[in-house]
Image (cartoon, rainbow, N blue to C red):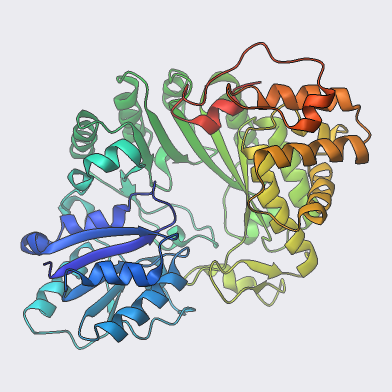
Length: 505
């Protein structure tokens, strides 16, 4: 029996929810009466409700995010009908800013903002029979160094099988209008010695896969350097993921980055746009020359796996400009280029462009843009499919040698744009396209539409597919192949299989 259940619906099992553990760590005397229960989007909502109610909790706290908002709404409705006396408290980004675009009216309380202290105080009031009068509880930003750290509450199973999320700072110094982090302009670092002690304890317990949630990891080169030193002193295998500012790499950070062994470091580099006018529209300050220099440095002098972002649909940016940015980035990095679709999140300033740029968004999560005055609805639909196909073909690393045949003239964007239109006409789907079928489709397009010789395509696909030992060639490829790769790797050779494929050329 637990008086309080802390729960959420994660996108995937591998994502261990850090927010729940922050709340649990700061419940003080109520910790002994609290249980964390995590679920995934693949779980049925009624089954989740059944498991939550097995403990007959008095309070259920649920983390609400853009990916689970609709499922949480359904969960709340079931819980309130089956156990109406159970008090439902919602927190997280999807309830922290108005307007609310998903109906959470059946929940009893909403905590807006950082909930570590507010949730603890609310639970004490509820369990003592003195509920607050207000339903929406505003939570002010906390002093991060007064919080109890949550990392000891990762279980042995978490450490062995899931991403371990850690947080060295909160807030972001930038004001990018599409991002919720822009609301909190003050960067609040955790006391570095205390944080490093927690990292060491996680390492001693067996943690080897760390994902930092800091929005601007390298904003403070001193603390960033200390954290990088922590990992440089360790023996691989391990994997550390950081989100970095693209135009801020002082020499002290650069030197450290050059020393990381292959397969240990991933850097998420938020570009979004390389167009100065578009960047100005969304209040994103960037030094574009320095970005190019830093990406070249990271590509040529480090073994870091790069994950670079571009966004479709930004106010004032045409498809042609987006295409030019994509062409530039594919020349600067061999890493992943994540093509995102602009989202309108409540609380952000992106809505100020709605009238001027004709921005039209979906009313339902994830609130993606449907059209604007530069990109029609049909074009936006095509771009959403392109983004998915790009992930399957380019970002997956499965077609490192073959993908460039789609744009032999060097125009990556238009080459892939034409391919994505053809591919959708063939499949009428963007999901559940297995690798063997995708290979057959790529072969067919290159040979039948682009006119590339069948042997050239087959040899290229064979080199891509058989980079990983244990794979077999599709029938069409096997029929035309004349040359097989000499070196193969097993799927188990790296902690980061997708990154291994990117290093295979």
